[in-house]
Image (cartoon, rainbow, N blue to C red; front, side, top):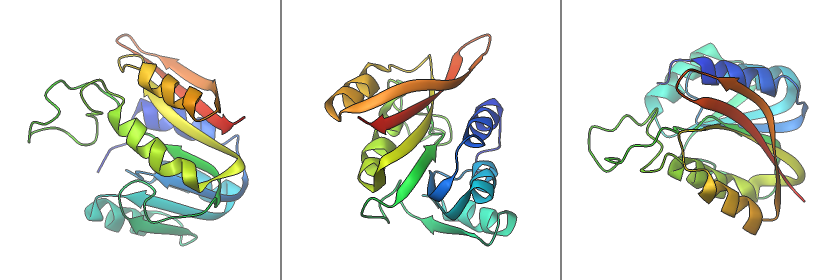
Length: 177
């Protein structure tokens, strides 16, 4: 389970500015974002690939949240969600295939691979006028994300950021043009 840190709190502050009918968090981690979503949305779903994380979050979050053990948004179909959020593992790890990788922080060889997987899974479930919020690090190779944004006809804007001594974290909002 991922313990909340600067990135979680940055995303939570950003999520507070959104409301609507249905929201999804991919990779619920500690459940901190799920709790904010439950305050601002009528229907809230959360996913995580770790059953242990699911069990722990079920005891800490609102009964309003439906929590599903699955990979990314694979349990959902149709354009259901007004808002989808995720704080994926985003740090580059050239030895990503190593069995000792830390799935809570290792985002793939260039740091963006897990983000792209989550994004490709989420886009088919996002409503036409929906929004998607993602945490990204300046340490990751964001050119692949920019390519997906361009080829998927998405708008991209930075809605929040935090400068740390070793990296810059940004909350990026994506929406359909």
